[in-house]
Length: 262
Ligand code: PGA
Image (cartoon, rainbow, N blue to C red; front, side, top):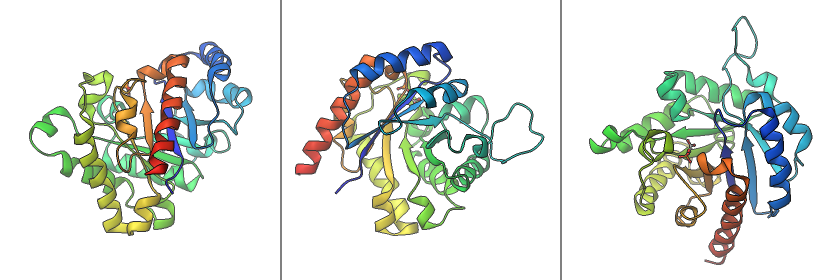
């Protein structure tokens, strides 16, 4: 039986504390609770504390969008995974906006993944090739390098707590939002699982959740979630509207039910 679906809202640098709280207030009214679908909100860091008091944590989990790899020390402006532990269940790590705008290296991302696990926070590791890399036929190499380096410090038991989000840079709304064909995505999801199974065995590879992300909305999401081995989605722009995010969750439930029957 497949894992629960995981549907993550990445609000990026949108919705201030007040707006985030209002969102949750409305979202609670339209959200249908499905046991087979896990819902995660990744608001601005500032909103994590107030939202943690506002959400029913049996129904909605919280994620940080980023944190620093050191647990404590003289690192002005940074927040550690240690400080976030107890507040969030997940942390998004290695998002392409962080890799590109903040020059996050493979090594830094590996250290952040390690720090998250060390502090009991489940990483949502984002990986994906850019448009020029795709055109040059380098997708597999990029996926291999980003994935293998990020999990290289982890034991097989720890890897099971990692969720991998495949987010081709060219499909993310920030970088152009080109439409990705589900059959093209299937090949990469298969490759991600293959890579994990080569290193940690088929059982671990099955336990790791693999998501798709890149301009997903309530129309397009079904096609991705229906893919073999796709356990959910990371939603950016479409998650800023609580109605459309709630519709994505309902779609995920329907797809989960039909996959279970297969
Ligand atoms: P998008 O963002 O849905 O707006 O393309 C996805 C992401 O960046 O995680």
